[in-house]
Image (cartoon, one colour):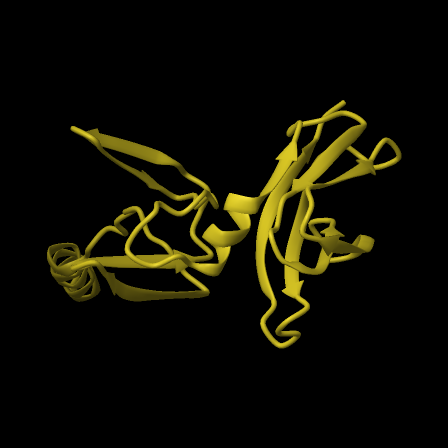
Length: 175
């Protein structure tokens, strides 16, 4: 009888202080950071789950969970990426077999393109001289598997070989 009473007291006390495990949305990030741009503070995380939630209010849209590269908006200064975006066009994208890079730099120099797969392996590496005239380069990706690829385009002007400007483009190969 004594043991039943002690066991009953322990169970009663344990039930009064027991907490159930709560399941809340939680994220374990591998990296992240914060930055202030134009008076706004932006925070980001890497390693987040791929749950996408989009919220819109007026002309502001925020997409949580996935960041996509895009053309930067024109501002006071001209960034390197914006310079490349203004002078390089890649089309059609997505494509099944062939896509073109069209470039129109006014200066003489060299256009260097690197096509990567999503594992970081270089699939194609081209160096094309630019003489100040429009250039059109064809890329045949028929033999590649359907998926996403990354093309890094850089331009190095002849007058300053140390000043190489570059930008990255996502190429979508479809079936």
